[in-house]
Amino acid sequence: MDTSSRWTRFQTFYQNYKSLGMALDISRMNFSADFFEKHQSSIQQALTSMNQLEKGAIANPDENRMVGHYWLRNADLAPTAEIAKVIRDTVEKIIEFSSSIHHGHIKSQRGKNFSQVLLIGIGGSALGPQFVANALGGSDDLMSFYFFDNTDPDGMNRVLSRIGSRLDETLTLVISKSGGTKETRNGMLIAKAAYARAELNFARHAIAITGEGSELDNLAKEEDWLSRFPMWDWVGGRTSEISAVGLLPAALQGIDIEGMLQGAHDMDEATRNVNLLQNPAALIALMWVHMGEVGTTKDLVFLPYKDRLELVSRYLQQLIMESIGKEKNLKGDIVHEGIVVYGNKGSTDQHAYVQQLREGPADFAVTFIEVLKDEPGTSLIVEEDVTSGDYLHSFFMGTRNALYDNARESMTITIDEVSPKTVGALIALFERAVGLYSFMKGINAYHQPGVEAGKKAATEMIAIQRKALAHLRNNPSRSFSVEELARELDSEKSLEELFKILNHLAVNQRVYVEPASTVFGSTYKIKN
Image (cartoon, rainbow, N blue to C red; front, side, top):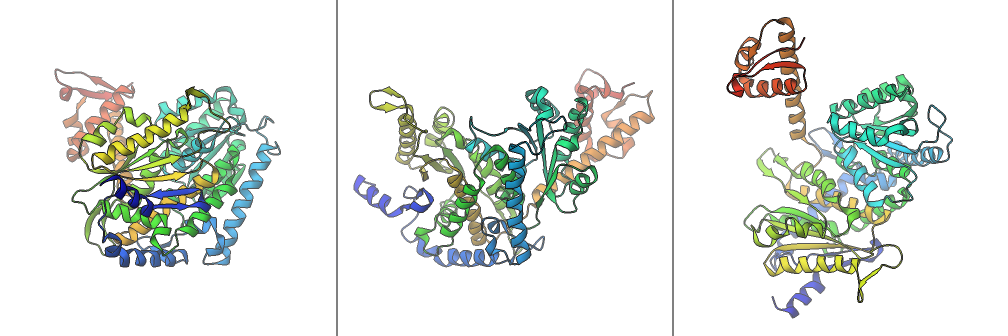
């Protein structure tokens, strides 16, 4: 395409949403001239379905649930006055509670002001808060944040070592809708033990964010934790950042949550527009559809040119892949729908995988995120008429051109600056794009049977381990090979798993291993 034609296409498909402080450019996606006409009916039906979802239609039929994360930033949309009230009351409680913490009206067990927060959660209960904390935090944060976001004991010990002697001024948020999520439960138990070693009562430092009547909710009531905040069936974990899950941590950090809510609200308004060029979420959803029509399944690569947005790809991995990655559509047909999401940050990525993006398989489309404001105030001139921010911006434009010149597709989201409003808007933009794409594809974006299958399989592994340890304890004088133990446990279909379990137990000094000439000939017995 010559320069003149490229400029004309750019002017057509660069859409500026001034009120959002954001623009979207899809001119470098190679969709056909009749693409929008071909998909006009499908996207308009998706917009209609989204409107019905917002009014309280059952949008998650597998679990017979409404999907209401859009109500969180506009309670007037809620289908009942009761839901609208609880949304408003929760935001008010978050603001009041955070203020009480900041002003020392609520103190730790030893009478200290809380200065640290340990957040215990996994998936959407951690990824969203981590993204926002990194994007909007800084030297003027009112509280420092730490995360348990896995069930790795070494990882949790590293976090506790960084908190160190300040545990007595650390507030702990435990986030789990069901209250039974094992990773979060394990993190809570390890945190409790740390508080106990410091001769502190965990309950005097703990907050629960959970479903009403859940295991965690009941525990918090029984132990008289500092406070409890709600999670609702109609908000999924990956769309919970604008609920108490994300707003309470942000408010404690000192982030303007009303700005985040306003940004999400304004983006929701913009993405209801039936005029496609004026609806950024509809355009993004359509580009994802286009990616699947060009002869090969394409990955989605996020490249934000801003350190503050480094975690956006991790956050969007869950939002997009957990929502869209489905074996069956709503009709029960096998479709294996999905988009692989990965990313890094500019210009770091130019020294990592841009080489393959430009010259390897053309099995992806890039979403650049361009941030116009470099930093508050005036930047240092590093050479004549050039700042380090100018270099970052030039690397973005250079990479974009280098990919385009080799027929690699990309779209660009431009934001004026990273602020509570633009972060809230970005969250809402991709939540809406996921919803519209899923309606177009006829899949349920709001359940996650694959995740549940993994949890079930993990439970089965724990059961095998318990059986193995019990059998070893009941036969303390015997040493078993993997095959012998599997045969006596009637677990011969799980030989590989039993082998891995025994070696894990051995390295952690919970069973004794007697080596043989090959690793598979080793025998195991209970450690005395």
